[in-house]
Length: 273
Length: 252
Image (cartoon, rainbow over all chains, first blue to last red; front, side):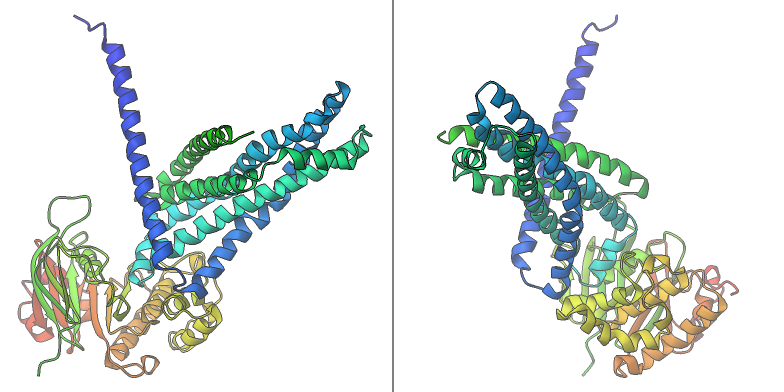
């Protein structure tokens, strides 16, 4: 006799397996993070002549090289969000809300998330491919055979470089957005003076927004880089598994960004207005 | 007084990470300073795993391994102090870092362990690059050179820190006559004390599929068979029992 609950059982099985897999990945990622933190502290300054250029090269690759595209996005966001909204608000006589809008939408939400997503797309995926291929071709064992700590040589520069890059790019994105928003008010001849524009933004910002922006962008950068390095390096991969690991990295990183975003949203809500 | 053995294995067993069955077991073996051991074994017999275990890359499943007098057992954390005294050349191109140039690959361990700038590390390894005839390839990306040359670069990289023990995993596989000739001339010089290493002799352990390629009076031979490492002895002892070891004494 067919079991009427078979479909439901199958569904709960699938959900249960997904939850267990998620918990297992989180546990492994946590352990991987602890190892990296341990290496950063225990080997701080060791082999700096080799490690420091790697960090700088990572900052150039994941930060400086992405500045044009982040600048472009910043300008576009400035025009679209600040400029357009300001025009709309001016029409209904509510242009004094522009500062709050800028801080809530751009400063707290869009700038960190956009910078992190750009870095993830342009650097995170190649990181998985590079590390996954290195692991699959046995280069990691070659480093170990030379007495070189693969975490210190391959992971630490990437994590530090990408984390710093997300922070810097978010700051640049905000500056570009502010400048282009101001440019829009001038070009569109909106009834907003420079003093109003900059004054409103300055008044809408709390001092807590600055450390929170720093913490949020650093957290996004650290999460994206750790997940990329974990997917590429922490598990043995065959060459044909590398593209799948890259796809998984994007999905896991986006979920991590959204979870972190929710945490910072709660922190912002708890702070006095 | 007897010198400290370079390696001493007591009841050592080795297994692959993802398998429960032992790959090699009950290995008792002693390697003295200046020895040149050639180990033969079939494909998948465990000779590469044995070398990687001696280099400290794979934990022991059982037994005790002593390297330069420093012992550790299967239950202990692998020490790393002797890593710089042991050089390992992997087979099939030596697993070079593809993103770096040939010279950068060779200079990397020097820069890392002595904390010197890339330029200073390159200067340090320049005599090694010259001694191994690699000047022409020094600036080439390591991922783009042929396998035989890559194997030679891997040898240079393993020698960069001036090891006392050199482990070579099937180094002559797929080489043409020119490269074979070079390796057959260079390895005896290394063992005897090459000027590029300050004239200090090395202890060598080589794995191979065919012992005949490595016959020589000063070398000792061993065979990996049925999960055991069987030391045979010098060439005369190997030849005396040639019929027993015919699987590993194929014509060149």
